[in-house]
Length: 216
Image (cartoon, rainbow, N blue to C red; front, side):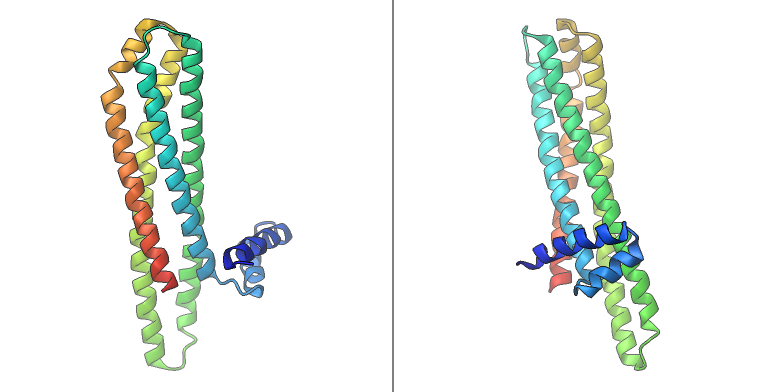
């Protein structure tokens, strides 16, 4: 069984036994040889994957919006249903991204709090100093990662708002003039979506760099 498979199995067991209580959860995971450091890396991987999936969904939603405004005739109810489905998919992906980022932040703060407390347990000053320096470097890399992930998270908001507005407008005005009105918003939505995907890719790159540094 792979390390990731062991981690997932332990996670399921720990959560089922402890009902999500963080301190009990960590103790159970540690009994299986899984430390906070390992959990943090896994949470970062999950956040990275969620952002990658969200990027693809938002790109798909943009394509559907382009297809919608290019329509000349046809079943407007069906067109609305497709666009609404893409919006709902994008909304769900955005919520997953936020949840994953929050999970990274929760474990990271617990890890750094424990690390700082354990610095006092060193009897040798040089080892304490080296560990403190390592913690400082790790915290710096983590802060950079979190800032990038939060920027990507914020970049989803204007795109979701715009898609929601267009879906509502189309719902309440199922006619050719409504399609024409949506065309005026295409450039703005394309710009916002391009910025979103750009921020997502930056956050994904930061996540990969952080994972490499933790596993190196």
